[in-house]
Length: 88
Image 1 (cartoon, rainbow, N blue to C red):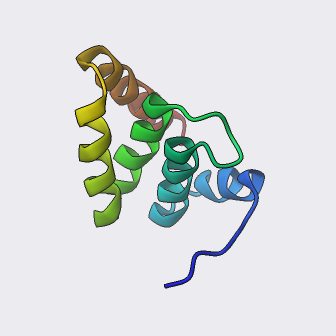
Image 2: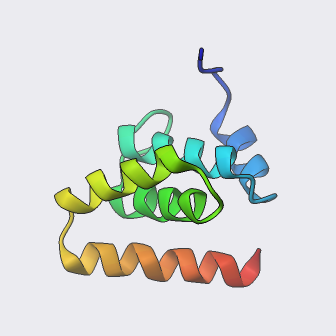
């Protein structure tokens, strides 16, 4: 499947609705540093949220990222995900 090139702002707006694909796209942006500074903690947060909403690819990416992160970084990402869920 071809990936559409869309702006970070559009993805963030779509993520506000909590759709798994938009959450996954945000994870990809932060994991790869495409259009934003790369940030594994934030990428893990978005992959975690997308996986929780049924995106299986996000689950795989989250596991791979966690292997490259410290326990403190993973805990921070999980905290960010919980905080996002409280407001969305």
